[in-house]
Length: 327
Ligand SMILES: Nc1ncnc2c1ncn2[C@@H]1O[C@H](COP(=O)(O)OP(=O)(O)OP(=O)(O)O)[C@@H](O)[C@H]1O
Ligand SMILES: [Mg+2]
Image (cartoon, rainbow, N blue to C red; front, side, top):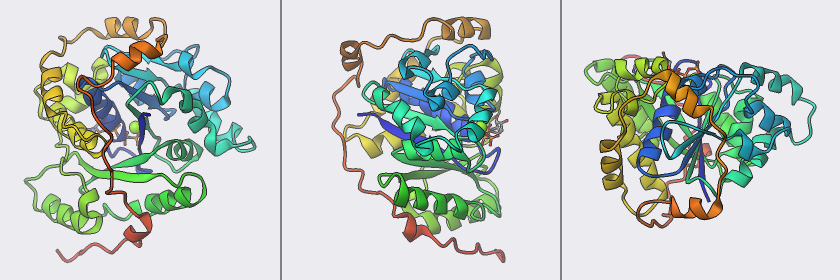
């Protein structure tokens, strides 16, 4: 049964999509079958993986509306073990169209149900709002990964998100955990970053990921080439840090360390292709998933599910304390 992780923060521009693309790619490089679902009408995860804008392509909107078979929405990417359910700007209409719909919070969860057996990880890239799209993602998810920038007001916006997670646990999805908080665009050389990190460590404890993601130009450039960083520049600090984050998250869920698999897989990454080739690959027929093949394509070495006993009690983490502004 695959693990569904939503990458969410209602604040804009904090690195959600960069994290979703590069984390999902790093999972797949570790030979973990991974599905990335673009839940944002901006469709940045879709274009960031080289898929052109195509309203005719079955996308997340069709899944939420229940008008397509989820298997037909799954598209290949240039990474062998990464698939994508793309988005389109028409997804913005779902927020309005679903208001009166039955089971409106459960649409994505229901759509992903038949796919959970086929992927070890399903990563959901959320829009920058606590809207019905993010709500659907959080109801479909087993855990939420929160990208944050180490800023002076870092904690201020997070209380609303944690409150929403608490409400969703109480009403729709009791299994929803906090996967972690990951610092993005991090510059460890500044005193401010050190101070904010110490404050976040006190607040989030072990939920603050050990791995932080540095500000790295390769991460910003890669989407314009339609590639994850590990194809665009596999030895960049950005690509390497997302591989470390993937290892950290995999270790939450699987007993067997996959460090070697990650190292090996990233060494054999194919040279970068052109965007048009990527698009051509991506626009091939959606995968016809054969359950037997999928079984064989599981982890290179068998792994057992670990006790993910670091589940966070959201209530324990609220209320958000004031940060020390005198520091
Ligand atoms: N570690 C990083 N180093 C350098 N640039 C980064 C990094 N992470 C993200 N960026 C850049 O910052 C901008 C915002 O990142 P991204 O799109 O991932 O944020 P987001 O939270 O998904 O935004 P939105 O809320 O609009 O969906 C993008 O231009 C991206 O390329
Ligand atoms: Mg985004």
